[in-house]
Length: 494
Ligand code: HEM
Image 1 (cartoon, helix red, strand yellow):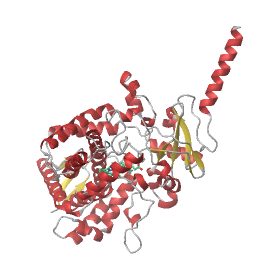
Image 2 (image 1 turned 90 degrees about the vertical axis):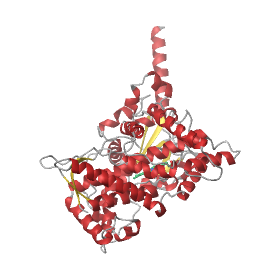
Image 3 (image 1 turned 180 degrees about the horizontal axis):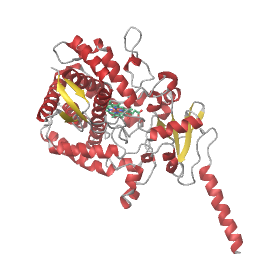
Image 4 (image 1 turned 180 degrees about the vertical axis):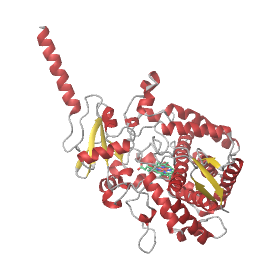
């Protein structure tokens, strides 16, 4: 009897394991992993530090589209290389977002905001947000003066720090973020922060902890939120510190409350007022205060980290390549004369533009897009992508494709210039993604990045600290990539 029971139990177990690990017809090739856990525990094997490199290694083994399971039933499709990435980004059946309980923890336990919503709700909120951010100055040259004021204050602070040190050494960790946030916040919240604002500094530190502890792959495992509440240590392993968002949410709620108290009908001061007006004008329940808080959270989180790190990486690469710094300064001096660089100079600064592009290519602060979700069964490169699959799109793999870039590991701004010295525009360069999920901050980010970097490089000269090794170019891991803080000897040029 016991023997029969054991045989039956084992048979049932084997059958269940077979059922859960069965792959649909046409599923992309990929590693098997183990039943229930899938392949996630083994990803580190391919690269112990960076998940985007691990995915590229898998793609060398299986091809540009790799499929495996994470957890018992969650299909995960990794897409690498220009052709497959382009196809995935322009496939409208893959523009959903995973419904992750832990993700909803950020925003009142619901899918709110822009970055992690989908369907008609996302489309309408994204369109509204983008239209009004543009009207208020996003990506417009009309906010140039305000941006230059921020840059000038930043330059003064760096100059003062350098002057206070006998060797003119400046620590570049966390030095740009308040200036970058001020540009964004002028449009969203209508306010300017002082450089020593302690509350803002604390919020920015929290944001840094969230981003740097993030794991783009493991955080996509659909773990129920209560598991993290019961076993908080699991947050570290899964790379998701969504519990820390509470401080930011509380702050944005208080800013909105202040706006409500001083609100004047049809006299919007900033994006918060525009959205509050829309809530009053509509009977439509999809516009509400929790959604406004969530949009601001998305914009603030995406905007603060990304531009700040991009600027930091430029200075790091210029420390490693003084010849590039010199060439950039020569071009800036000739084109801008005594003035600080402005938008009107941009088209006459091709070498500078090429440096900015090369840092974005090689520094790659967003190595993956935000995870996409297949909203119905579809195909990539002929493989079946089942409905509900998480699709991880690897931008790093496009920026490092040998077939197109030839020597992608080399920092060489000239690769972006043609024989006549004009900037080459190519869709092999896509730091902001592409298709319907394209970054909504692209134009603001490009403008801020350009004005800040050109002003810094024209006004200051950066060099390595004598007797010390050059600071590392290796990025700090996380949801995005960050630069390690570094020291540089800093002299004022003009
Ligand atoms: C150098 C700076 C930046 C880079 C490299 C960058 C890159 C990206 C990338 C790769 C995506 C994902 C696209 C996808 O999922 O397919 C994205 C999405 C997004 N970005 Fe940016 N970004 C930057 C700056 C900004 C700024 C300044 C903002 C603030 C407005 C912003 C707001 C967003 C939002 C809200 C999304 C989600 C869009 C959606 O899901 O519809 N980003 N960004």
